[in-house]
Length: 201
View (spheres, helix red, strand yellow):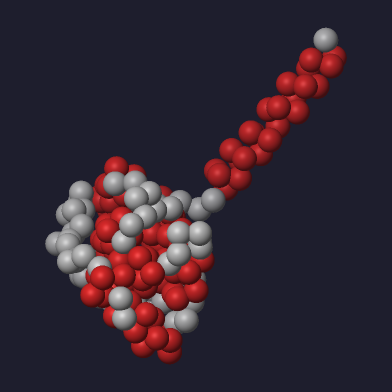
């Protein structure tokens, strides 16, 4: 009996610790007004419905709150991030990776936030060998920052001829005000850079 109880405890404790860790993570929607929270949650749900990562959306909201942005700016940044993630997902699939990972979509969206077009991103994806990690390749390009953007664009432009025509992603949310929050300032990480960064206040 004692052995059975100990076995159950050993099985349950890791799950409890994981749940506590998840609960301890800050949820930026809690600091929003009721109306803004509904809009923020709708955008998060749209990301889930489309198989897009939600971490970049949380990251940009937290960044906005840390920088004292208005709720309108935060919601606009969240929508911009959703749009870029959806476009990155579409571009990566068009480039030949049928099931892009969260890391790949996040890095792809980061490149697009720095000026790479969806056609160029598809071309870059096509140029990555099947045995090579696409996430690592995209993250390396995204990590070059503004000074290396000319090289990043050149990598994409060099293979644009082999890429398919760029389309527009279908985004299951109202993105008409995506730019209303203004341009956002990058923090350096691929996740935060997806939004382009929140405007300094």
